[in-house]
Image (cartoon, rainbow, N blue to C red; front, side, top):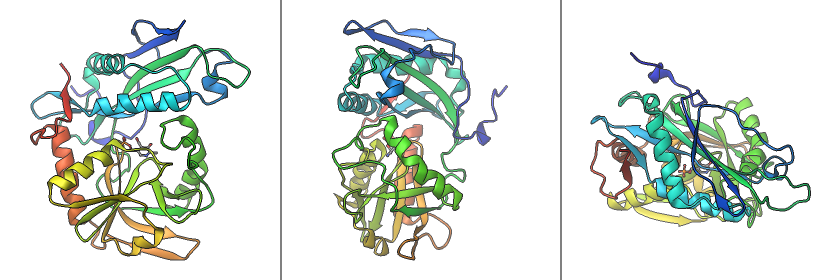
Length: 339
Ligand SMILES: Cc1ncc(COP(=O)(O)O)c(C=O)c1O
C-alpha cells in the first residue's frame, strides 16, 4: 500500500523515519549516529544561531524503473559543502563521511523514496552548523552535521510548465566577494524580502542582478539562469552566485547535443535576444520561463508563447531527467546506485 499520495506531494517537509548526525569536538568528528527525533538540542550561544555559521546542501534520490535508487553527482555536493565550510570558517565534513551519511540515510528511509513515474523524488538535506558557545564574533570550536531526507514533489507547482519571474532591483542577495558562492543560510535570509514581494505580485521568484552595477543577471531565486539564442546555451558568470551542479551538468549535456555553450556576464538587455530562457537547479530541475517582467523599466520579455518550453530547453530536460531516472545510459558517470 502506498504510504503517501506520491503524485500530489508538495515541495515541503514530511517526517521520515531516521536522520543521521555527527558532532565535531576537540578537533575531530565523532561517529555517525542514527536518530528518530526531528529535533536537536542546541546551545543557546551556538554560533550557528547568532552569527550564521551554517551551510547546507540539497540533492535527490531517484527511483528507477528497475527498482534501483540512484543519487546524482553527490560528490559535487560534498565538495561544495567543503567550499561553504571554508567560506565561513567551519570544520569541513570529509567527502567519505558525507558519502557514508547520505547513502545510509537513504537506505534507512527507503520506504519514502517516491516510486518511478510519480514525478516525486527523495530530497536529501545535509546541514552543517556551529554548535559551540561563543559570544564574541568568531568561529565555533564545535560543529554539528545532520542529514535528513524528505519526499518532495516539483518545486514549482506546475512542474515543467513556463513560469513568470520578476527582475529585482531593490534587494541584493549577495555581494561580489561576499558569500554568494557558498550555500549558506544567510544568503537565503537576504533573499526573502525579494522572494515574498515576487510571490505577492504573482511571480514564482525574482531574478537578482549583480549587486555592484545592476547591469548583469546573477541568478533566479534558488536556481541558476540560462538563456538560449543561435543554438547556444548561455549562463551567467558571476562571483556572487551559487555554482549550480545542475547547470554544470546542462553545459556538458548541451555540448554533447551539439549546442554551443557560453558562461559569461549576461547583460539584462540581452533578454530581448533570447529565444528561450529558464532556471535550473536540484529543486527546479529545468523550469522554462514564460515571462520576465522588469517593472522599473516597464519591459516584459516573453518566451514560450505557445505555452510550452522551447525546443532546446525541452531537449535538455528530457536528457537530464532520463539520466537521473536511470532511463538513459549514464554516459557521464553521474549516477551512483544506492546498494
Ligand atoms: C541560490 C541557488 N542557486 C542555484 C541553485 C541550484 O544549484 P544545484 O543545481 O546545485 O541544486 C540552488 C539550489 O541548490 C540555489 O539555492
